[in-house]
Each structure stands twice: as structure tokens, then as C-alpha cells.
Length: 426
Length: 142
Image (cartoon, rainbow over all chains, first blue to last red; front, side, top):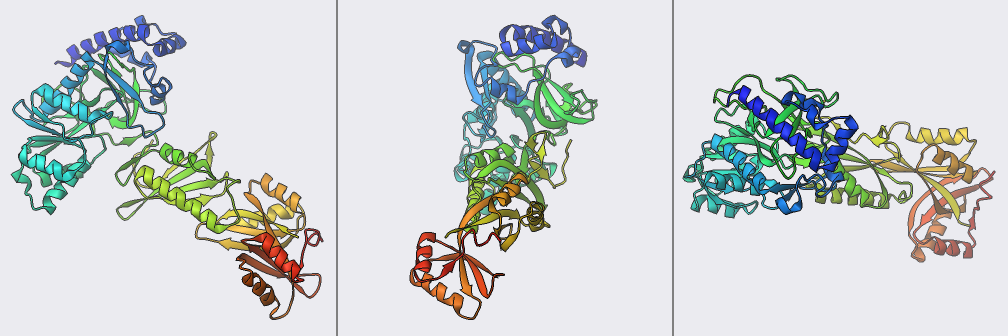
């Protein structure tokens, strides 16, 4: 589709969406009224910056279905975020939304060369998480024989790969490496499998990791990007050029903003990724702030697609950390501490790199009530916090008790993370 | 004749104990005895002071984490073997000493031994029944 036509389509779709959302979602009507904004003020896609932003917190505040734009009668599917931070964020789909999801996921698979004669092995989790069902939907939409393998049990996964002969896989990039390792350990050459390509997402990964997966599994490895609040997997996908992810711009409008000023940044500049759903029925969000850091790439892709490319997301603007490959939200630590007696919910996480390994230290404020003269008891508090953090996060942390009120407060809240590793930050 | 000891939580950092002594100095409080328990990451400063209530107030107002702990202040002759007798008594009665620190009394020839035991009441009665002299809060207020 030529860009001019696409922009015209986006304008039409956005205007219609704004009108509908204003009528159907009290939350947005209120926001519009506060801003003195009328749906008629949005006349083209260029007016998008007039619209209010939507935050994850808005979804939580309207838990579970408050932001839905259709009656529950029309909703045919519910998913929810993994719920790592506080309340789960709940998303809904109408029948048309599922068709749309199938289509954008089919585009994703198609861009990697998948056709109806392929066999798909979906190894994302099935359940509230959108990965499994979304991948499944896309694979079936293409017309592939689809194997809902879900996660875990690597031996069984490999047996399926050997016996059912799927030609493409969907899983997290780290699990792909686990599979590769299993094959190597068991003397199963990757070329004895029928795999041609794989679609990897749900966690950030590097070009080096791509190289490793491609080499060890003997496949082409494509990055996919999506989030449940927008639709799930299928928001953006890589083509054969493997150089940036094409955004399904006819349905999801992408903006890159400066997270401080909230102003759009020019193409080729990094910023926070913001999405507006222009066609979804059940949960159309306006200017949803993803907190992922990305960049709109300049210039056309050599594959000929006109959809703008999103450079591989390179970090987060919020406090989500990736420690030893595990997504960690400071709020997870907070919930561990809240559930324990004797320590204040004030803490600080210090992340450092020692050699190739990330090291997490958690400074925990002792409460006056819990302070005891007995060193043994204090040490047992430390031990208990360490164990609970390990069971919630799945990674080990060094816990250090500190004096009450000694953790720096930032605008009344504690500054919770000090990341000493080198990474992009705002 | 249980004595109240003040315990303060401190991190292992430069000036941690200095900060405590400054607060007490500014409040005109005299530290009669002091001991520091340390671990890799934190410490507990234990003190007997002359004016306990004002000391607690000053420390808390300055953001310190403070706790009062019951201890026994045993008056022992300042000569070889005298502490041994007291500790024999506690051991025979199956009383655990959790920690202890001592100082020499400015009142005379006595040494003062601060004892924290697992069973404070039992320790107290054993020691008093056997004629050991224990200090009271009044005794440290000079």
C-alpha cells in the first residue's frame, strides 16, 4: 500500500475510532472533556497528538473490564498480562478482534515465508498470556497444521519436533537455546529436524542471540513484537531482510515520544513506543504508553513493504529490569517485603555486573519494631527475605539490612533502582 | 534489678557509631558502657547510659533505630577468677549467656559485667540468691 493511501486510511480509521470511543468508554469521555477535546477536533492522523495518553495504570484503575468499548455480550475472549506488577491488566477481544489478530499474526508468519503447507509448533504458554493463543490463531489463519505444544517439558517438545516434523516454531529466544542445547546433549543433529524458521519474542534478545539460534538450530530466526494491551503478538514483525520490525500500521499507529516531554521525536531517534489501536473493537486504547524504548527507522525497506519499521526495542523507560535474563519489576520485591513482618516497604535494588553475570543486591530498611538486639534474629530476617525473593523472582539476590529512612526518598517515594550496568537510559 | 540497655542498629559504614555518640553528646547524655556487635553488613551498638529516657528520645528524633533490652549488670570484684564464679552459677543452672561486655566501675574496685541471658528472670534470681550484687538503673545515674 502506498504511504499516501495508508495515511488516508489511518486518518479515516482514527476519526471513526475516536468518535466511537468517546461514546462508549466513560474513561475516555472524561479525559476528552477535561482536555476540552471534541471527537470532531480529530480530523486526520496528524491530530493524534491532541489525544490523551493511556497508561497501564489506567487499565488497572478500570480493572477488569472498565475500558472495554463493547458490551460483554460481544466479547468472545479474555486475556490478561502475566500480572508481575500488582493487578493483572485484562484485555478483551470481539469476534472481529480475533479475526484481526489472526490476520496480523498471519502477516507475521507470512513475512518469514510460512505458507499453508507448513506445520507450526507453538511453544509459547497457552492461557491468559497472549503468546500461545495468538501464535496459534496466526498459524491457523495461514492454514498451517498447528501444534499447540505450549511450554515446558523439553524432551516432549523435541519428540514433537522429531515426529510431527513442524517447519516453524514460536517460542521465546531463550527457550530456543534450551532446545538447541538439548539437541546437542542428546546427539540429535538440528538438520534431522524439519524446521525452516522460528518467530521469537516475549523477551528482549540481541543480534548475537539471533546468530546463535540460527546457527545452532539451522533456521532463520525472526523477531516479533507485541503486547497484550495492543493485541498480543502480531503488532510488529520482521521480514526476510531481518532489519527492523514492520509495524502493522493500518491497525496500530505507532508514535515515538520523549518520555519526559511527551513530545514526538523525529524518525531515527530513540524514545518511548506509543500505540493507538485504530480498528480494535473490544479494547481500543488511545496512545498507549508501552514504556518500551524503540525507534522508527528511516527509509524504505528493501523488501518493498511500506509499513514503517521499528528498530529492535532496546530497553524500558519504566523500572522493569532484566537481570540474568529474568524480567524483574521492583514492585515484585515490594510485594515480597509487604508480605513480611519486620521490614519497611522501602528498599533499593542495586544491579551490577560481575564478569558476565548480573548481581542483584537488595537494600532493605528494617523497621523500628522489628529491630532486635539479637543479631541472630536480624540475620534470620535477611535470610528469610533472600529466600522469598528467590521464590518470587527465581533469581538470587544479596539482601542487606539498612537503617530505617536511610534509603534516599525521591518525591516522597524511594528511588528504587540503581543499575550500574551499562545500558540505555533516559 | 534488670537494667535497660539501649541497642541501636547501624549499618557498616564510616561514621555510624560517631553519629550515635554525637547525638548523645549533644543531648548531654553520658555513655556508661558500650559494646558493638558486628556482622558482615550491619552492627548493633549496645549501651548503658545515665539518662535512658532522654537518650532514647534523642536517638529516635535523629532517626536511629533503637530498642531497649533487658540486661543484668553484675558487680564483680576486679580481680582474677571473680567472673568465673558467676558464670559457673549460670552454667550449672543451664542459663545461656547470649552476650556480655564489661567495664571497670568508677566507684571503686569493682568491675561491671553486662550480661544478656536467654532466661533473664532465672539468671536474675540465681545471681541474687547467691549473693551477687547487681546494679540498678539508679546506680548508673551518676
